[in-house]
Length: 264
Image (cartoon, rainbow, N blue to C red):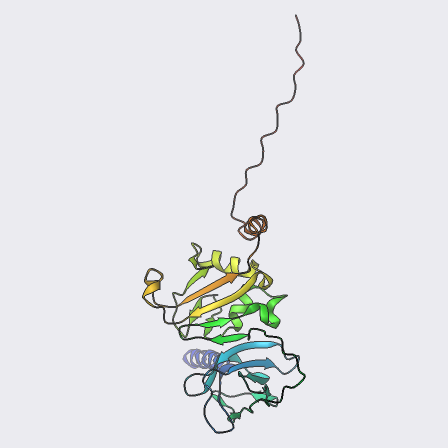
């Protein structure tokens, strides 16, 4: 009887673990144009169906495939953007199995009839360059009300596990830079810094998954370079004192109380 009880407990725990593991999964979709040519630099945003808030961003690869990993089951929709193409929104879908493959998305080219229309240039939210992906925070809805940590959670290729360990494309040991310089912080100190750094102070985040020889000293697990907005020296000092709460500022020594001389 005791052995049967132990077996039932083990089975129950195994089922619970399997159910927990199955509440997250992967979403995939291929992006192409009206000529059925893939669009390898299209930006795909996963949005919550309830309020259209951004959950995760992805960039289509050389085969036009965009992938979202470790996504909680639920109702979502996709927003797809690409240069010289009209933005595309999918219908709401119920993500309840993994991997979940959406029907291919066909983008429509923008009309060239722009007579009488004034176009204001603005950096796209995500830029795919030859050696890195650039997240232009200032050009996104994440520019206010978020932290650097929350922006990273939504950035393409970046994964943060329940223990707050940051990885790029499944590789841990990522080096975090601030304005091109490797930060001395790591572990919980780094996480605390990222959580306290407001997104409104960030210009862009550069994600380098395959660092060149230029970054040999930083290792080859990947680099995340957070570029802050340019501010004056006084504001920079104030920001450093607010964010780096480990900085010790000694209090001034109070002047000794005056002593009235007593004559004999």
